[in-house]
Each structure stands twice: as C-alpha cells, then as structure tokens.
Length: 433
Ligand code: HEM
Image 1 (cartoon, protein in one colour):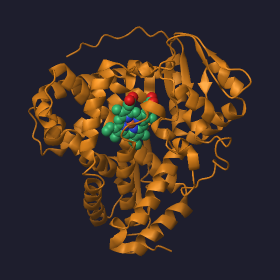
Image 2 (spheres, rainbow, N blue to C red):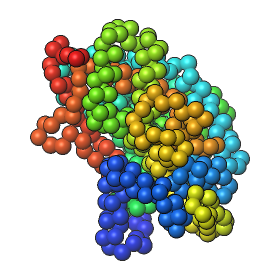
Image 3 (tube, helix red, strand yellow):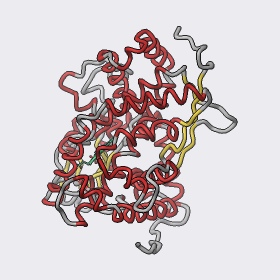
C-alpha cells in the first residue's frame, strides 16, 4: 500500500480552490461553456493564442496527429497508474489494446439483452415502490454494472466483493462502485482539483489496486491469458475504472438534458406507450431512442474538452489566417463542445435534431467519444446500454426532478453524485397526452 505524501502545492493559496470551483461550475453549466465555445468558433485566432482547437477542422487536425499531440496529457490524472488512455502508441499500448479488444468482444453477444433485462427488473421495482428514487444510485449504477459483467466474466463478482468479501453483499458492490467513481473522477477533474479531492482519488486508487491484486488469479482464469501479474493487474485496474463511472455519469447527463426538453420527452413517452409490451422488440423505436441518446449526449457531453501534450514544436490549423504555434512541453486543448456545434461543418447544427442526416460528418455526431485512432473503443456498447436505460425510463410513469426540500441534483466536484427523480402522477394514473 502506498503511503500518501502530500505534494507541495505550486499554486498560491486559494488560487487552486478558485480554479477548481470555476472548472466545476463550467462543467455543470454546460450552456455557459457552449457560449464560451461559440466565441472560439467565431474568433479562431483567440484559440491560437491559448492553444485551443475549436473549429471542427482544427479538432480533426489535432486528433488525427497522435505523435504531435499526445495522449500522455492524461497520464498525470490516472490516479491508479498507467493505462491505455494515457499512453503513446508503442508495444505496451499494443498489447494492452489486444486485451481490451478481447474484453469488448465478450460484450458483443450479451448486449443489449443484458442491459434490457436489468432495466426491466429495476422498472418493476421502481413502479412497485412508487416513490422518488435516485437515478444514479438506484438505477443507472446497477444497469451499467450488470451490463459490464462480461468484462471480468467469472471474476466479476469477486472483483466487486474483494478477495474476502461476500459476493452477494450489495453494500460491498456499492463500495466498489464508489471507489472506481473517484478514480475516474480524477481523469475529469485533472490537476486543478483541490489537494483533498486528489488525495481521495489516490486513496481509492490504492484500494482498487489492492482489490485487483487480491483477485488477479480469478481474473487471469476468466480472461484465459497467460501474462505476468503486473500485466493483468494494470489492465484490470484500468478497465474497472474506465468502463463504469463515465457511462453512469453520461446517463444522468442525458436524462438531465431530456427533462429540460418536455416536448421531446412527452413525444418519446407517447410512442413508447403506443408500443406497449412491444417496446423492447421494436427495432425502429430502439433506433429512435438511440438517436436521441446521441443527440442528448452531444448537448451534454461528459468530456466537453480533452487535453493533449505537445512533445515537440509544432503547429495546428485553427481556421484563422495564421496557424497556432505549439511549443514543445506545452499543452493543447481540444474543445470538442465547440466542434460539435460548428455550423461551418453542418448547417443548423445548433438545433436539437436527433433525426439529422449527418452525411459524411458522422465523426462530429460521435465526437463526445473522441476522434481518430484514440476514439473510445466502447462507444457502441455505451450507447446500447444508455438506450436500454432510457427506454426503461420512458415506460415508467412520467419523471420529473424531485424537490424533497433539498436540491434534486447534487454534485461532487464536476460530477453529479445524486439525481433524485419522482413521478409526476401516481403509478397507474399516468397520462400520455
Ligand atoms: C458514455 C460512456 C463513455 C464515454 C462518453 C466515453 C468517452 C471517451 C472519450 C472521449 C475517449 C477519448 C479520450 C481521448 O481521446 O483523450 C475515450 C477513450 C477510451 N474509452 Fe471511453 N467512454 C465511455 C465509455 C467507455 C467504456 C464503457 C469503456 C470500456 C468498457 C471505455 C473505454 C475507453 C478506453 C480504453 C479509452 C482509451 C482508448 C485509447 O486511448 O486508445 N469507455 N472514451
């Protein structure tokens, strides 16, 4: 177990708190961030001064040059150690990617059926209880957990319970899910996070590493690979934190966006009601919901921006008359939230339109999952799971944010920690008008 030694803070007292506070506020108020992004779209030379790629063309330029703009920018925020997302291409990246691809292949035959099953189970429980519930803790967390089961296959229950724990104990499972949430949170919060938040991520990362070390033989058997302990542990730790929390958080974000669009919400609910029990089998409806998931994610991405290291002097095309010079040792910001709304690439892109024909601009539709060779390899699975989760919410009585005295949405830094929702009318009395 690593002993925590506080790092000297290079920022003046108070400045870190202020910076982190600002970062969290911007993340929570995505509309403000979108307006800011619009400025960079209009005046790309400003992005040139600050090393910000905003226009679709600039973002594509940066993201398709992994040697000039390196993913190592993530490395410092990987609290639990080295993993794919923070590596440059090379032998370690290549072998780790093979393991990841094999684990993702294991999801192929089970999705979306496994997600649908868990959603149907939860929908029945929530209907039966007929009271407000937490969208994250009581719904999304478990759907993603069960849907991701094949990633660790026969070792899944052991990973969640730990070497000594009771595999049927939901308390231990919950503890595991919190542990990976804080480790993943550090990827998002980055170096501006307060030292307390960073320390929490480090402590959880230590616990996660110890947990995985305790069950690495189970994982080796489940994965059926003969590799060193170190190799298994690195990949298992990485896969644990990268798969679950981001998907859960994205689910909460799309529901937040949907609830702010009552007409869209009502229309989807009406179509679900017309299908009745066929709602799970109807391919057209599933496609419709999937299109909505993608569009809602575009309006509320969990990664509105990404960072890249600049290993050697270079430049990128901002879209202004002059290219942006990037000095070796610096960083570049990829403002995906701007590129996803760049009307030079797709006219009328600012409009919420799930049925839009993206033509040859599909990459912009999926930009919340990154772009190029480093794009999220699990994007289709994540969208599958979120589609199932959203269908479940559409067949429940109509949802609204619950105002039980406190705030319905609670935050932990940049992430949502809770989202309480309730039904607008009692179960059995709902209308689909
Ligand atoms: C809605 C859910 C998800 C979102 C929004 C998301 C988003 C992203 C983004 C934006 C990147 C690119 C980062 C960059 O270019 O710097 C990425 C990479 C990655 N994601 Fe996801 N992700 C999600 C779910 C998942 C899941 C479920 C898994 C695993 C099962 C996963 C595994 C990875 C891995 C391994 C990478 C690194 C790929 C590489 O660098 O080659 N993600 N993800």
